[in-house]
Every structure is written in C-alpha cells, then in structure tokens.
Length: 146
Image (cartoon, rainbow, N blue to C red; front, side):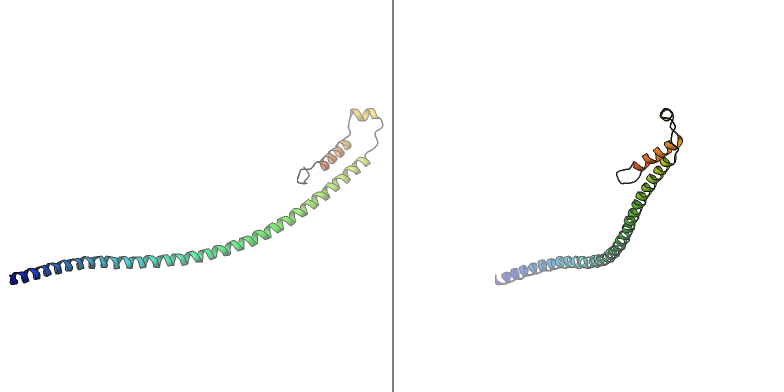
C-alpha cells in the first residue's frame, strides 16, 4: 500500500504540474498579446504627440493671422471713420453752397410786373430756385441730402 500510495501522490503531483504548465502557456500567450498591444499603444501615443505638436503650431499660426487681420481691420475702420467724417463735412458745405446759390438765383431774377401773371405761370428761374431750395432742405435721417 505504501508503494501505491506513493505512486498516487506522484501521479497527483504530475497532473498538477501539467495543469501548471498548461496555465503558464496560457499566461505566456496572454503576455505576448499584451506586449503586442503595448507596442501598438506606444505607436498610437507617438502619433498623437506628433498630431498635437502640429496642431499647436497651426494654432500659433492662426493666432498670428488673427492678430494681423485685427490690426488691419482696425486701421481700415479708422480710415473709414475719418473719411465718413470728411464726407459729412463736405455734404454740409454743399448744402450751404446750394442755399446760397438758391438765394442768389432768387435775388437775381427780375421782378414780376403783375401778380396775376405770376400766379398763372411760374418762370423758369423761379422753378429752378424752388427746386434747389427743396433739394437743400430735404435730408435723410443720416444727414445726407436726398
């Protein structure tokens, strides 16, 4: 019995060793896959770092372009505002000139002999003067002559 008991124990140990070897082989296969995934992950991380660096450079370039455009637009807005002010002054002066011209045209026309003739027929000079006066007094809401 002691001999068969020894064989049974050794058989049991041999079976356990075979199970351990099989499990070690399974673990080895899993570790190989894990190593392959690690290399793949390292490559992906390297690609992400490269893409991040490229994006940072692109963002820097965009910031520079925005700064240049902002300065250019600011200068153009300042120039446009000055030109608008200058045009407004010129329009005011032109209104003054038209008023003076209409006064001159009214003063230069010959006096009408009879009031009856004046009411029946308006002279050409009076029509021009009235049109000039109406033109100078018409204004849009932004101050420009209509």
